[in-house]
Image (cartoon, rainbow, N blue to C red; front, side, top):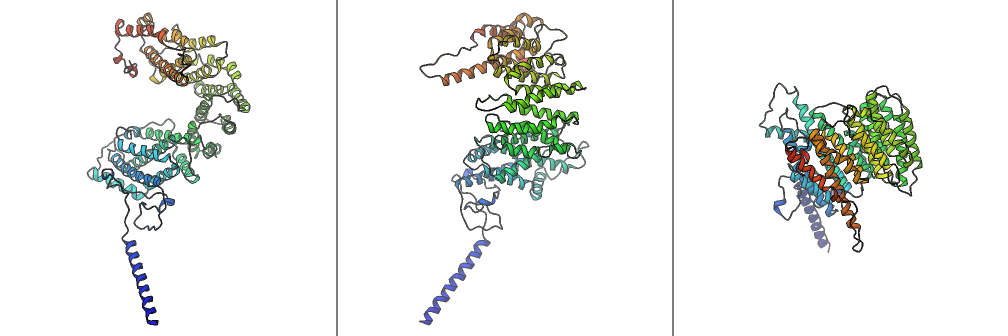
Amino acid sequence: YFFGVSRVASACAMIKRKKREEDKKKKKGRTKIKPALSDKKLRNPKAEYLVVPSESRSLPWCLYNEDENTTEYPGTATDFIIRNLVAEFKTLTGQKIVDILCLNLEDSFSLETVFSSTTNPHLHQVISSFIRVSKHNSLSFAVSALLLWREYQFNTSAKEKFKHSAISQSGGTTSTTPKQPKDPQNILDERHTLVIDHIFVTTVLALLDAQSELHIKDPELDKLLTVTIDQCQYYGKAASALVENRRALFNLFSQVLGVLSKTFFHLVTDKIWNGVSTMLTSHRSKTQALSRIEALKHIRLDVSDQIGVNETLAFLSSFCSVLKSSKLNKETRLVLSQATCAMLETVAVQPLNEEVDYMELHRLLVDLYNTFSASKRKQRDIHVQTWYPLLSALLASADEKFFLDQWMELCTSMGRPLREKNLRPFLLQSLRLLCNTYCAKFSKNDPKLTANLDQICALVFPSKVTKATITFQGESVSTLEIFVEIIISIAKRDLDYSMRKIVFEFIRADRLRGDSQPEKVFIAIRAIFGIHDYITAQKNIAQANATTADSTRPTYDMEEYMPSICDFFFTITTIIGWNIRQLAVVQPISFCL
């Protein structure tokens, strides 16, 4: 009996010893596990697999580092799909980084053009798939993976890897000319940074824009806000190819803050605005303060409910207290004013909710308007660029009674500076905001509608051309588009007025012969197409909302104006002999014709 028991014990010990040896061999020989795809054509054998966040590293399809050992296997199918997408994303972006680093050091490039969907269809397809998967309760996981990807790309080893790949693909040498800087290494580093930031911010922005609701965990949200705010850098009036790309990145990162502010308004504004007033007094941190103020342009103020109104009121009170300071220089005041205008425009376009109390908010806006309108500035140009847009934004966001009492007086005061070409774009934007707010929100019960529209047309579209009136000759296309938007705003309220008293005055045959300005033709044609698009959209909405029993035709239509429009096209193509395709200023609408 004793002999039998000892034989069994030794046999068990030998089995355990062999099992331990086999486990050691397995751990030493463990390799990366590649995702098993059913279609071999979809598999990229050269793909570099990325280790994603730590909470999901123990999946059975996990992509291991060589030194990592994992024995537990929880996970979901969504994680598996995102893992494969991130791996393919890393491979495609890596090749694009190498391509840009291979460019000649003298060459300037636009990031938007380099990463367009036409030149990178495979990358945009991966991003599109990434967006679809992230909608299924995995936005935090997707954001965390992108943050980890960005962190990996900025590692020293990853940087050197891309640079060596670029040098080997370019033949091992870098061409130098007298125009190149002495240190090309700085250019490569800057290009690498630009490309990484552009890929990261465009992908994150696409992910956020596609979500109906933003559900991001606190750690990922905090990291994303930190990275976004750190990358917002103010460049002022500096102009170069490098600065233009950086300014484009600044706008993209600011848009990320704007999208996040819809859901996390208090957190985003506190993180941006915290300490700005102190930074403005310090010369070293002033640029950082201007960067944060500039980023506030994309913040979206929500006044649709009482919580949003209270948050907006608290933030505007703190923000405008800095704007009231008399110690600010003209650059800081201009940046603050532009940021205030951009934020208040989001308030002006929102319809008022009858169940929400706007009294305190409107009281603050009226107080700010009276304060700024009473101030007088010695430098007239700065006054026009700063205070007219600010007053217009405050007035457009105020209550109906105060707006109707003040808006026409403010418009009339712009008449004299409106004649100067360098100040005209700032004033036209203010007039566009006031006209759009009046026609869309406050003109319904106003008995002075026709008289007010007559004053606006006399100011912006004078019938008699004199030295004291506006001339459209030599204006940029962006400025002419503002005239078009003013006409369309009036047409939304009174179609007959805009067509007969503005558009048809521009396209009269006798005027075209005597005063044949192509800019007027551009404004007229763009306005006709814009009004037509608006009417078509309204018809589609009316037909969708109308029942089969009550499907009446909308009262607004352009059929009665079509004979005059056809005569206009006949006049400019036959009588005058204009060739629309040869007119540079009208070329953007030639394809519509």
